[in-house]
Length: 329
Image 1: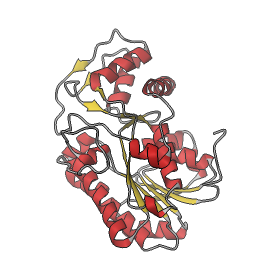
Image 2: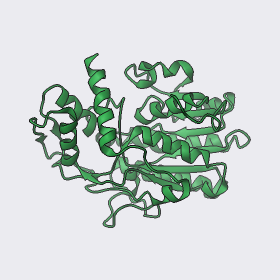
Image 3: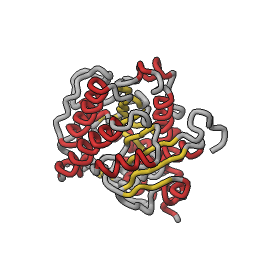
Image 4: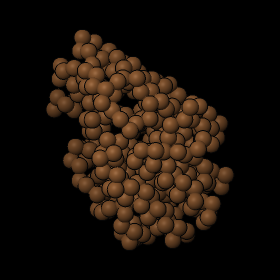
């Protein structure tokens, strides 16, 4: 990647969980471009992930194993002399969480305290820890947009797993002064998302195939959609400030602050693909999901001088082009 600032990350030893996922692969790409020494913790070898298809993995160290394996995580942090940790690994699909709450709680809650405890044991090495929570951690609120001081009141399995992980991070800061910060992002989308049951990749695939897209809900759910490349840059911006104690224990919302309902997103994708003739099939089957959620990102703007670099339509256009090429090959 041309024109990136390398000084903050040159030769830094960085640990990324969930590196083969949508956000993980985008973040690894940015870190590698900046000269970081990246070590990835991965459970599954997902050939279609951009981490592998783009050969990023060849420029990283790889530790194979589970988030919940404390001895493995501790060994990886110690042997690779990790200075900065990005904890992105999680079970991220709401429907899967509803069907399989135990495995979701194991990955998202236990996986978080295992990582934090391993970091706590290595204070001379680990100086910065960034943990991916979610806007779902807030649960359902009547007052929107969410601000960072809103209560974390998740009700359904995925939301609860993120509320718990978020609170555990706060506990490790307040109790042990662990240099941890928390991110709460809107719904991520972008190149490399192969979870076809998600709205944006599923809709794009259907439209490119000449099929009517499927909407599981009634189309009225409101979300804040956030381009993954902007999310990766937001993580870097926050991590670069974690050397300052005032950032420790803090949570930050990241998103576009442009709440849209599902049918609006589908319409934008129809236009981007050029298939406005394919009307969506609305199933109205989605359950155990928060009907309306979106973020106030003023804290990130004020503390980090941060803002997304792309508009929603620009991000969607780039995403559509990636899928057009990927699905044609």
